[in-house]
Length: 306
Image (tube, rainbow, N blue to C red):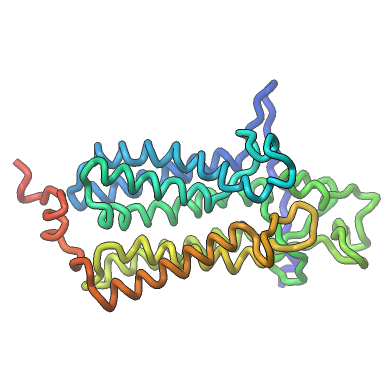
């Protein structure tokens, strides 16, 4: 049995005044992969690709702004200037919120069906999370509380972790007899931590599989179901996982009461989305997804082309 997971992080690259992190790079790649998946699904069903590209352009800008400024309340204790600076901390939940809200607004402005297109976007949101979290694993970001589990991440001397975890690093002279850094807590605790980004990646991958299963196998699935299944799963997943990040360790996420800011958001979004999924299933306010129903929502069926 493996004692733990351990690999050297890929540090931030510096090119003169420029700094490149695989965290940001993979987040960008994740958006592109997710957008491509949405466009391919729209093409398969006959929806207008040009309008979708317009929606994605607006959603990209909004997700960047949302990711940055969603974190402002958690850093107000550092002063307004520090909290509002453009290159501070980022939040994936804020990115999702900004992209979805503005993307939905743009869909309405363009006159395209919001429920159908949000359902198609759910696949992209899930796979984008998977790809983006690969970047977090490369740089070893979002470590959680200490653990003795075999799937914990072990910090060894000389490892250059993500900046938020600088306090978890060590040199050979200060390592323990097991060759690992010690956790900055009372007692002789090995520096093995929950790899929360890895857990989030696995959860998002399972969610992507569920979405495809529902879309392809549930013959009576209704418009709007998939996007709210995504919201319920991912919101509650983040609420659960952030208990591992709500610690007293250096670099831990800021809290508001008993929960982190992402936990409050995830809990609210997850509960509301789950309620909507149940409402759609019981009250049936939207039609069953079909080619004919797609056509009524603006799709061009293959037989109708030409």
